[in-house]
Length: 551
Image (spheres, rainbow, N blue to C red):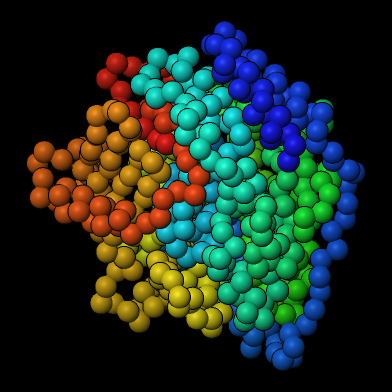
């Protein structure tokens, strides 16, 4: 897009001109470029494809429909099922867990969104095909770094030379078409495949959702939940958050269908996605379908429908009330999807999976979002990668059960493929495992994984059934390691000095794994230290712990 290039020009001028008014001037330039370049047409109705099963099978005799619902930046403690939480109540998601299976140690593939989505769609570590970092528009990380540098914390300046070495635009940073997506696997089995919401896996060169196996894709083309002048939308801005300041300047209220023109959604975004998901279910009730419902909620910018906001008048802190209202809409949407499956006689033979792309963000200024875990999104501490991980399939999976062994996003790929009767691609390493034999007791001999690995430049981690080794190793800075016993004190006590033999075993496993991965297809542009225990609204203290993150 032309506006991406123009943003880059603005940023070069700002960065070259020194530090005076650096963030404010850059953000002003971004806003001017975006508002003058993006064309959004009025609301358009999406007419979803309909069809019947070519074999004429009933809903019970067909292979299961598959619905994957993905939240964005949902914290562990945002679900009321995970503990007493007076702020956010999620009765519909809780019901999904009660009627299905809860994976108590479910892990996102990464501490930020896009690499997790890449693992979900491919069944593989994103680093196997060079997808290590979250794609960001030109200038995003430098702006975040520039504003972050006003905070008194360890900081490695934006790596401008690194960013200049990439010949890929934002739209070209993504999942290569050579990867075999879950949509492609299921389409080969006769499934009608539909994507709704966020994609973030590339748009150019055959990387868009409608080029990667989805017959239909209703894309989140920008990131506002509603127009800024809409009286029915309530917003909360965090001046302490550099990412928030970028988003308000950069985003629009827009959707796109199968690569067509950008149009304005007719209502609050989360509710709109739910409306369309219900229509998809109704349109496909007579044939096997795969619905990937990738919600934006509750990612910033914090915008809620006024109806949901007014329903939570007992919450005093404005940003917390807006955030809780966003989750209220998300939870209601899950309930409406489940009701649509029941209304159409599909719920018994539909595999529904629910998860989040990473943990809750520290930059929203809510300290308890990931309790009882340490850390946030943009870290590999448990708060950044331990996520809700639920599955419901009455025809096959036990109801109300809990599975305790560690599982990973890429397992959803393998589980869905197996449910559909599809074989996994044989020409590449597939890291995901079909979880059904483990949870049904067919396979009791082992856990799904011996090790799970995580990597984003300076931040790396490996865990086994009990232990977790964390690494923070930015270029030119001292390497920091932690060793945690996740079965005991969790990440609140570092045992690196007490158990060097465990640390060395995990260190070797991590090194072996890294040796098998590809270099990133695009470079990181900034490495920043994040406070592990204080959210961004709280001032750093002298004895706080920090972990570096590259993107």
